[in-house]
Length: 144
Image 1 (cartoon, rainbow, N blue to C red):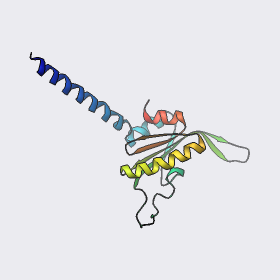
Image 2: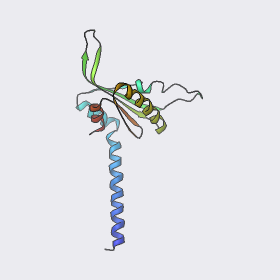
Image 3: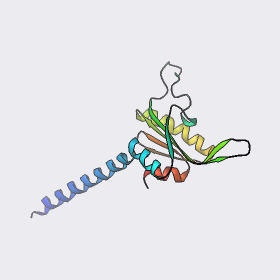
Image 4: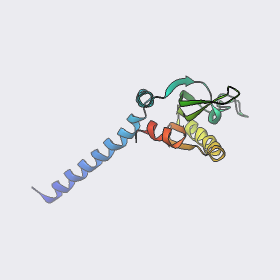
């Protein structure tokens, strides 16, 4: 076989493998897969409409435009802890936000980074998906 043809075939193969692996990362973060993975670990998962890192997302900016466009938001909890006064907190909490565009994801990521500095939580972003929570919960949601 011709050396040039062999080099071209190997290059095409490597590019296809790279694209396949990149798409696998995105497919593991599909809402159905994330919910399933969290539920398999014992989490209670529900849809929400707002959270600390998305506060103000549907309010207009100074030009009258919506600040961010957000689709589904998920909230997962594990191991509730009740104090003496009856207040419930959770050992593990996670929020998964599916933004509708990259600008909205960037807006949520910016808010999440600021909140993460205050709370010590972890923030992970993949394209238009933002995951915010404790390290163990983020690891489970990401599928690692």
